[in-house]
Length: 322
Image (cartoon, rainbow, N blue to C red):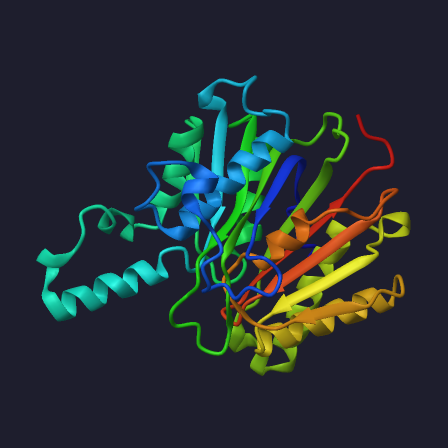
């Protein structure tokens, strides 16, 4: 039986990164919301501030891609793991120490992580839909994937998609993340603008308990390899930049093994493995970062969580653009 791999494809018309300066820890003060956004954003959680700043820059970079479409044909999908984790911890601490009456009515509504994307939609009249996804580690790429599916189904004409994080106060052994990465996406099929890119994504799931058996490990390896084949067909479309971002876990090990063997059979690519992060931002940062490989080359980013989520994405600049 052949299992079909669903590839979502879209065109990047603009992108923006809002990240701590090099050498600055994510928990250090580095973002001035008054300077970047103006008045009226004081009580918005930091991840929301980063996201709105990224949206303004991404839309400017796209040449105002939303302007030519009715608000009902604009959408947003945001991925996050820790956008409001610090707020939740603060609410919990306040209730324990002083009781619920001491909570601030200005910040408490943001206990719902959906309001981060909601504020983005209200700010830019994205009335078609807004969605927040929180799958561990893969939520950022999942947001890109879901936005591309909506575009392909003609449920929206333009979508803002990406990830936003603020430092998780309980990151465990992972590195906290802070910042936002946002892409302005249009349907595939039209011309790719100068400076734009083609984005392709695939989502898979590897059940962690299945990896205890040899047969389960084989099925997981085959699943990841089929996804890679669908994303990067052979020949000149093979990737020339590859990065794996995975938790140290049986799932991460299984995905790494599949990726290494797949690369070894095609092109001499060095697959870099990044350490665990308490968030879903890093993969989107890699996809949005410029410059992309020139002349049709592809940047391949693979991310996996110990919970079983696996997301694969490529970004490339065609040889001929508009």
